[in-house]
Image (cartoon, rainbow, N blue to C red; front, side, top):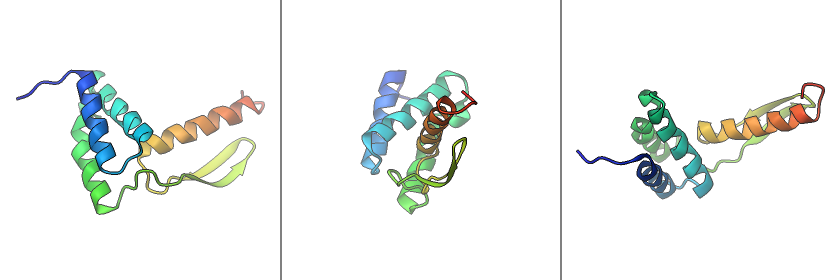
Length: 108
């Protein structure tokens, strides 16, 4: 069985995601998080999931690069529609929005 170090796995995963139509930045993000899951002992959420993502993308159930839309927004709240994009990508977008909202409100 071939062995790969973490950096090699990140590159391989990212190349696979990009070949499936995932924007480069998103492919790197998801690949980094999958490898990180393995490195921290959460193998069930690691690189083993790559074939599941690939199948979902090929079937159209997952839509890399889909627009993430704000459905509802207040100064302290936002509801997003991820457009069936990769969950990690939507989560990062949501967290960045939360951080900005916290900085601009009494919460932060």
